[in-house]
Length: 594
Image (tube, rainbow, N blue to C red; front, side):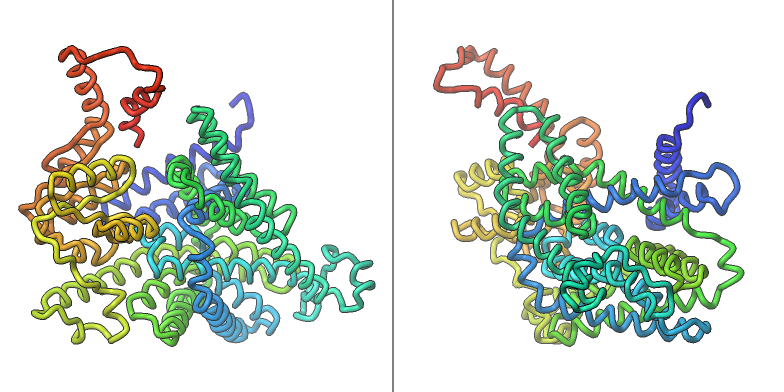
């Protein structure tokens, strides 16, 4: 090879092998994540053949974390975050304490010191951002109550880990390692007279508070203003670039200037941008890159795993795995239940947290560097992460299956009562009352397309129910007299609530053909006689939707072409008047990108 290209080689090997292994995993009905992890093992340093650059892979994976948290922030608001603080703060802290305690006991059983056990337990207590959010997004749970609790819990864990990474170097000497106080200004410590540890705590708290205040006071005005200015240039390329610049720039700047994590900085950038009307478009623009780099995260985890550890340390790996998947998730479940939340919410939170990831690696590497942990601790954490990530989709499948059984049992109750199936506090959240509408049209999505469909149907006198995952939009629709459900259409019980069995039409007005295909399949399974109308951007998408049971498919570009031709042939074409502006042209071209 004429030039050294480790970045290109790592990207190509990681993505290509992840694709092939993901296909094989899908063929054997395994989660695609299993294939991604296997691809990482294959190109890692512990197996023969090509070895990718591990440092570069980790940095590429970090970009995926940034884009993922930015996307989640776009679906959040400060109100959403504060609404779950009563459970997220004590829940996350309580679960960290329990996991740390069991990690400490495991370390003591292996003959390590108490200080080593404390750090080892902390590394097992924090969940992976990527794994948790991918699981929630696949099930369209991010904007539901359980999704908000899980994300709020994740943010608290993030803040605790940021503080831990700052405090560990000066505390290392107390815990039995080699203390490092280079990050704490000696002059400031002497001036305050409170010691290096408390100085580090105070400085960290001030930096995090300053960052949050800056984002909520200045960022809420500046970031949406920048995006709106770029949108008015009319350049989609510049708009896409501006979204990436905001996500990556704020994440990097927050880490360098304020010491917070990339993930936390990106989340707040997305959250302040969520107040803009362009937030949904911004989310769509980051989606392809987000998915690609998220895959590289799983590849990077696989690269860390040495298969020899399965032979040399099977019992230690098994104990670590049990602590992560069972002990930690059981603690989360009991905490959520103790706060009076339904059984199904507690199960979702428990499944969400039954894994570890990026912060665990950072913490254990720091612990080894400070002589707090033996080198074998890194092997155990990596093995625990790999197997917990592998099992996590199966846990979610079990939770989904259990929830579906609750719904089915509730639907069979003759009077609609759920007392025999659910505890009293669960009924309201899990099985809401179905709509009284019959022979109605269910419209999924209330964007520019969905809005016009609803207007035409109501004008024709047809009863309509809208499913729109943006809760604020659904609330506004209900205030205007239109029945609406403010949850993702694929959420458990949503179609039941929309009375899919009694509906006449099912319309998917969302632009995502993959998501629409899943919804169409669910609707067809629930009501074999329902008429299904879907939108598509191409013939390939139309074929995809037709396979899932759509009766009528509207291809945007073909409809625009037909409308323009009809106008010309009917003799109604006329020059645009000055008062028409350019809006007419934009409306004709827009449907393919709505």
